[in-house]
Length: 123
Image 1 (cartoon, one colour):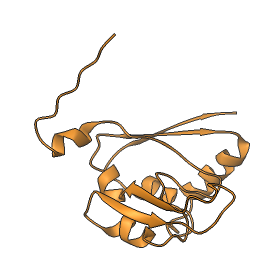
Image 2 (cartoon, rainbow, N blue to C red):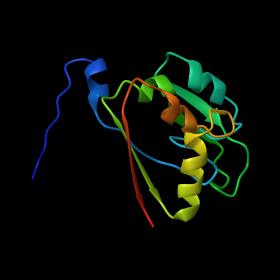
Image 3 (tube, rainbow, N blue to C red):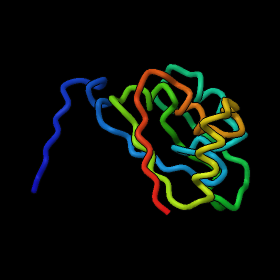
């Protein structure tokens, strides 16, 4: 089956549905805790930002990333977050009750009120 999607404007492209995951450190969409560029990526009205993460066991040695900003993610009609395992469920629950976006960037996705977020979890 072929499904074609043609966008007539740049803004129309962002009506797609981002499917995100979340790391055990609370990162999502390459928005890593305490990373260089994170605060800009969370506050900017630009669509994307460069991120330089702190070394971590979570993602290895690839420290330089490009990510959609929070504003870029919020141009979609909704967001899906897929998580697995009890450890990530614990991180998810903490993020729901924590607005510390610098230490738990996924919280910024949960604490916004512009776009619905659907979370899917399995053990």
